[in-house]
Length: 231
Image (cartoon, helix red, strand yellow):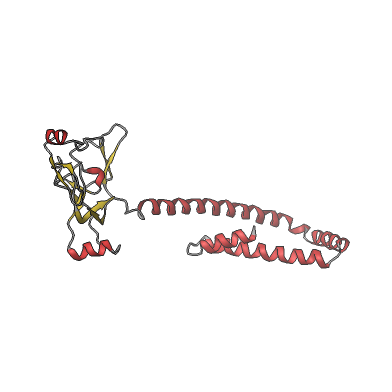
């Protein structure tokens, strides 16, 4: 018990509540240490006699001791409540701020409609969040969609591509676009992103002109810019 309180108090030392928890843990650990040595050195009969004498001498102070015990229990309850609140705060911080902050964005509800999360500074996506219109698998399907049937990048065979319906729409994640949520980066920023060292604070981009975009470019993911290369 004492060891656990010491560890907990040490973790919470930056907060005021951590100091009394740490001190309590130290006192309990010291008490158990001395208790073990007393039980080892002093015979049981002598210990019982000493204990009875001590109890008699402290009889007048029993009300005060009981009061202190009550105060101690209240302090432990308060410490437990504060600890739970701190855990909730820490979990909230990491689930919101560590993942990009309490962003204002558009989220998809159970009915497939865009709803505000916070107060987005850009209009809702043009396409429904359940929108699905995969690229044609054959030349005829592709041309029927108004697409282009040709070789894409390094692919040795022809595939389909088409202009995105929502091209140019503001976004913060690929999930808000038919194609990709691109953000304009300089050559140096692209090189930094390819090395995993990109550190800029752009919060939004624009939906790509084409459903399939090739090359190395900036892409937004949950409000954070990164670099992706598509061959």
